Amino acid sequence: MTTGDVRAVEELRRSVADGKNWYVAVLEAVRLWQSPEEDYEGRRYHYLVDNEAFDWLVLAERLCEELDGIIPEQERLNLLFFDMPPAGLARGEFRKMIGPAKYKAHLNYFYGVLVERFLVLAVTDEVRRERRALGLTTDDGVADEAYRRIYAAGQSDLLQEFRKERRYAQTRSIRLSELNEFTYWLFKYRVKTRNKSCVASDTKKALMKLHEILKLKGRPLYTSAPDG
Image (cartoon, rainbow, N blue to C red; front, side, top):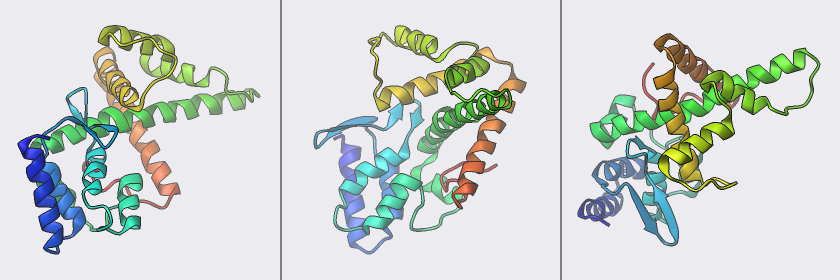
């Protein structure tokens, strides 16, 4: 742990012991944290994707380990699995608490990883509906067709190109950390290869899918999501 990480943990424990809301204390600890990744109790934590996109909930999970047995378990699960914090904060407050640098990196993750996945989901659903209208009932090739529509190349070809560029092994499986990095790479690949109007249209489509799914679950847009 760096000096900043040690300070973050110390401040977190002290703040909670002094009666501060544990969620607010975690956000303040996030601002102080420095390490982009970490090995802790047998697990590898990756907080930054491609040194640019900050997955703040992974760091929140790690920091919650420092409060094991102190915070209500259901509140912890709601935050880590559903991004439903125990204390309501305006987005401006969230930005202020984690700091401008980490908030900017958080936006990179939101749009470059989370929203990018919803774009693939939205286009996959479009392809599936078109096939159902033609009387086709199998999903064979649906995902690959979605990738071709978005990125003008199949999923396997894109993954192979990504791994070749990063000098990663061409394995049959993929770790979560690599999947996040691949998704972020796809986002930058799309921005680089498509015109601005297509990029804007794709982003809008992905956000609509995100809103649609959250509405079905009776949930608002993520508390840590950007305005707009």
